[in-house]
Image 1 (cartoon, protein in one colour):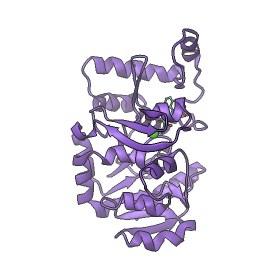
Image 2 (image 1 turned 90 degrees about the vertical axis):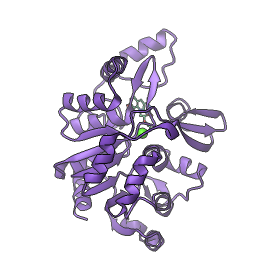
Image 3 (image 1 turned 45 degrees about the horizontal axis):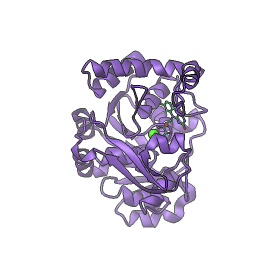
Length: 303
Ligand code: FO1
Ligand code: CA
């Protein structure tokens, strides 16, 4: 069996590729992006992975359900409610049901397991923690929720810091710990290191497990050269003084990753990454098609 540490948009391609070859796959999902809106609990990374595996993801946007409409949001706007977050009509159904289950005492992991069943997704999806851990971005315009920074303010304010609210009090889901212990390989998806993988590995009990099985942990670089494949990774990395290159990411992952997969165009970084005590694997890591996803997935599984 394998376990994947994943965020949303940046991770779903590799997760989908791995699903084609891996029989028994567990995905440990970031929860730092989760947000309460209109009294509803929205879990973007969990939903992106499940919609992606179910074939329902809007792949142009990288989030939400394809073909969805936004009538409810338009009406909310008319009512004067803040409408900066694009909740689709069909997407809202999951937030309504999830919130009602939370109010009835279900845990986020129980709800997520129910959701994979409903969408006929074979993989297990486990929220990294059932505690509310929230990624907060510290900017020139004050501290705000990650979604406020990225969606409401379009990632424009200058970023000076990132923190994971309440991570010190949070405990990892026990099923996530078990999956790490039992897996033949643990794969870190090419996700934003600070906002997608960061909140998962900031859980002290989970990180401790990863450190112990470091030789089985394979990370795929989310950067090619100095640029992120997608999203604001570089902005967050700069704020945390992490060099914006695969070497910077490797250093950030140094204590819990044994093998680092980089683009074959990034050969010049290999020796620096090897000096961190990691194996380096150079290949084509861009995923533009389903074929690319499956090819990279297979390559990782055969390492
Ligand atoms: N991202 C956006 O850039 N704009 C949106 O309006 C938006 C809505 C949205 C709704 C549901 C959902 O599951 C995800 C959504 N996302 C949206 C993506 C989300 O903000 C991601 O967590 C971030 O892009 C960070 O990875
Ligand atoms: Ca995300």
